[in-house]
Image (cartoon, rainbow, N blue to C red; front, top):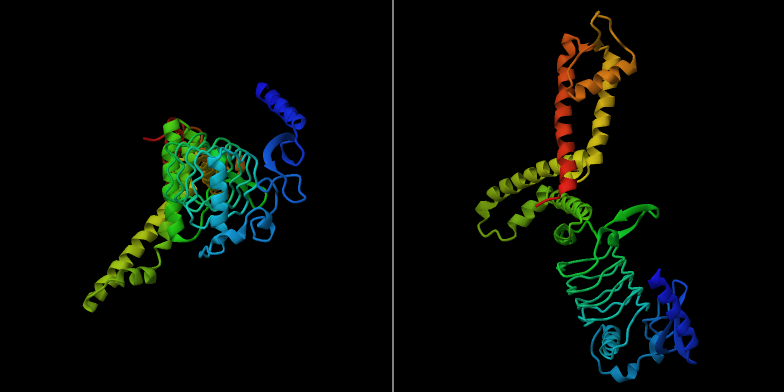
Length: 391
């Protein structure tokens, strides 16, 4: 409440001190005074203008002297110009709070954005060009769809930042602040809540995702955020499964293993090796898929409960249809309630009292009891892992 009052006071002061021709931008209904001059006929400076096409030469012609850079022999000339402009302002101590840099592509120019203030900034789809955001303040910034590949994030403040569908590669998270699972929240299909970084069928990108999720898992676990670490661990396993699936194709394996083949007489062995690798990857993929469906790689106890309920229901239908349960008087019970009760007792291996299977169906009942032991064990394992964490 105190912070909100301070923000209101700051907003009112900004209105009072509003000089003619100075940018006065708004955020969350509050007014903030920017020290820069308004651009063209807009109420905001160039950086605070919200336009998708503002980083083209036509719109920015009054902001950057393009004639000064006529001899700049680079295909990514615009990226160089905006990089230099932003770096100069950061060095001068100017902040970029609330600015709109949406879609800006630094095109591998390695911009130095150290200690920049990007709070509340719109940084969606920005390609940070292998640069550095060391000690930058990104609180409440929107980076959805941005490219942070090989970007230095040491001591970066990422509290309440939006990182849904962001591309990571070779990033370190050990020294960042405020990162949590909700930072990666977004919507899938327009309405379904989802948490993820940028993923792709491309095997190279999938390997980058696996490495990123593994680092996030360690980061969250070191913080004691067990639920967040569980999410990252599950996504790591999903990426591993996708890599296994990509390596099932025997023809691709044969081509890959034959690239450096010198002796053509070894082709037969290469084919056998490739087929063996494909078969091994197939079995590992199927086991991984099974693990995901049944217990979510040890991270989703509710999946075990769902599968257990499904098994109990299916066996109940079988018992009812086949007339398996009987009472002590030898009377066959065909109603579903009795079958469901019998299935639950069998699944939980509590033992038989008033109901027992007829001889020819004992193996069927035994198979349900075996599934019950396995699924109950998996549920306890998954629940304990979520509650205690991992090493």
